Image 1 (spheres, one colour):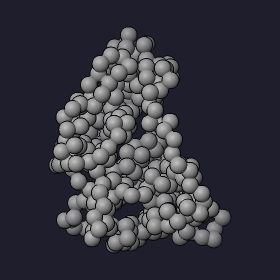
Image 2: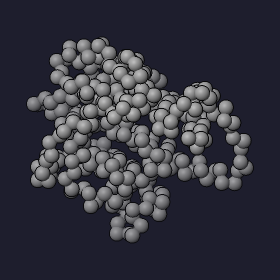
Image 3: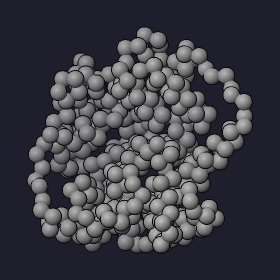
Image 4: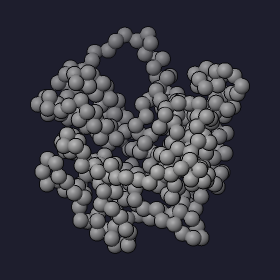
Length: 329
């Protein structure tokens, strides 16, 4: 099972889905239950260390005839659990026993055989998100245990998982991410600077990126039977976010930064003004650890992120307030 982000016009909501195998069409996905705009509404708290996922969700899973382990459900909802509760759980040794469950270890030959069919685009994305390096060539043929997370999933589940993982990328990591996952460094070989995006001709870089994006859009080994939705024109919805990442974020950040070079410094918000932006009282802020505060910010940032239907100005305000307040921790 997995969590999917669904965008209907101006409304963004979450849906619990699962992947299943069809002998004729391969891996497909199916909706289980719509979780609305805030999945935390389906979390029931008992005390400061105990919570459970509501019966409504569990009944919906059983109605679909899906066999599951409860720990898997907790893992899915974990990002939406109250940060204070999460901290308390971690302080008591981490009841996230799901992470401690023993898993079978495979030999390198077994891993190589299992991972043979992983699409190169999926492999590059996973490798960068794990190691944060642009030169992925030495790793592309290596059998690595964490790549098994890409197995036995529909295309929709893979894309939803990647979208959540990409939210963890910092703005300055996004350019390298796009440069690496689309293999753009190969276009500039054999130059010694081929692994440095900023050293390349921007016009050529834009051209190569669009070529790779279009090539992937017509690659049916990537857009297999597990895609959702099936009716679309032009660039597939799974790939549209990379067009936005490239032209509206990774390179826009650089251009926006240049505008500020010769501008006079503007008045910064006061401590209390930043707390107001974060919707926190001074007492609540003081009681939070640095880890709790970062978790609180990430949850709030996801709600206001422009890519998730949020307000761009509020997102910028939130980010600036966080950068100042986190120094207090």
